[in-house]
Structures are given as C-alpha cells and as structure tokens.
Image (cartoon, rainbow, N blue to C red; front, side, top):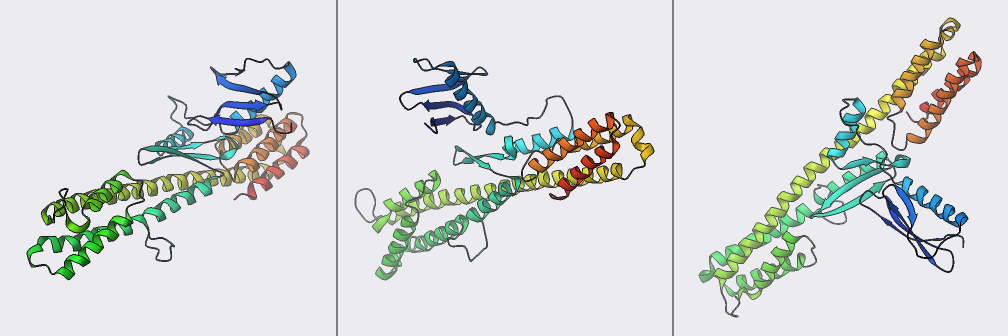
Length: 345
C-alpha cells in the first residue's frame, strides 16, 4: 500500500495527536501520549512496520510543531519578539510557517500560512472583508452593508413615528424596505445579526403577535434590531483595529529578520576582507562568526529560513576549517554564506 495513512487528527496547535494507518487489511491507531508515540490497536504490528509507522507519525507531528517559545525569565530581544507575536495569537511553526489563531464570533479558528508575507496579506484580506473603501470589491464590506441596513431601518421608523398621518403608499413602501432589510440578514451566522433578523422578520406587515396592526410594537422591534446591528458595527471596528495592530506586529517581525540578515551579511564581509594576520587569531575569528550565527538563529520564518539554514551550515564549516588552519577553504564557505544571504535581502 503506497500511502498507509488513512486519517490524521490534530490538536489546537496543529500537532498530529492521532493517526490511523492501514496496511491494506486492518487499521492501526497511533497516538501521542505523555511524550511517546504508541499504537493503541489491539492487533499487534510486526516490529519493522511499527517502526515505519512511528517514523511517519513523528515526521507529521514535527512538521507543524510550535518550535519557538519565549524562555521564561530571560529578557532577550528574541523573547520580546516571540512574546509580541504571541500577544496577537501568532506562533512560529516548523519549516518556517506561521500559525495564527483567530476568534470568529466566539469560535477558535486556526490558519497556517506558508510564510510571513502570506500571513501579512491575510490581515489585509480580513480588513477588506469587514472595513474597506474599495468600491471595486465584488461585495461591499460588512461595515458598509450594516450601515445601509441601519439607514433603511431609520426610514421605516420615520413612518412608524408618524403612523396616523402616514399614507398607504408610505406604509407599503416602508413594509417593503423592512422585508428587504430582513432578507439581507437572513443567511447571517453572527448572533447579533441573527437576532436583528428575527426582530425584523416579526415586524413584517407591521403586525404584532396577535395578528393586528401595531406600529408601536413594530417600532420597539426595529429599535432592538438597530441596536443589535449597531453593536455589530462596533465589534467590526474593534476587529479592524486589532487586525491592523496584528499586521503591524507581523511587519515588524519581517523587518527585524531582514535587518538581522543585512547585519549578518555586513559582518561576514568584514571578516572575509580582513587581513591574513586577523585569521591567525582563531579566538577572535570564531567570536566574530559566533556573532553572525547569533543574528541568524532568530531567522525562523519563510521565505528566509532555508537560505539562512544553509548559510549557518557554511559558517559552521568555516569555523571548522579555521580550527584546522585551512584559511583559504574557510573563506570560500564565508563567501558562499554571504551569497546565500544576498539572495534574500
């Protein structure tokens, strides 16, 4: 069987905690318990197949594991960055991905982004959805639609306030506006909008629960409906502000990674073009290369992660060559590390 994986269950942090493998005949359930991968199926696997499935489980588990957490009690620049991301429910995942945990109307929704750029663009998409002045959008942002609903309800209330003097034409037109506004809200999932829809739907024809015309009761319902919609607009404003702040935090993280890469490149160039006498002082050279490695250790997101990993390998190899007095070879590795970093500046 080419792909024995039948089902993967993940936890809130996108970690694989239960994987069902199938050998073509039977299911074998592997789970992660107390730091160990175990097979919970009654039927026993042969050792070779068990190790094979366990290896696959571990690979899947590690792929989306949160790999960077701030170390308690340490006041470092890296900890500050990680804590700031965490404050806005953003997490650094393995392979340079970004996990953002959203709260949609009280429900937790997780999205994983392939790199820092796509996570930033996602914030723009959220703000466009709720709050945008772009008239070319296929669908008006929610805040504009809500304001239109409030405006429509206000028109109806004018008729209700002056019910005794309202003409049949005005009453019919107001009822049509009320019906259209209710229809605009009928497929909504948000609780505030659902509540507003229910109030407007009950107001159809300006009748009360007894089936009689009752403009007073309908007026009260429209007030409740408008209040619910108004609360939703305030909620959207808060979402917009929070999303804008989260976007700024992600942009700052991207900028810091870029600055670290630029500084690391500059330090490597300074080392590369140093005199032969400088390279004879191994302690100083290793110290300078160590500073570069420190700058690059907090480059943890795509699209920078893979080139930086390769650059770090070259720097470590350069340190190894220096320890063996192979200065010419060390310079080649330093030069290659510089070129790798230049590709992502």
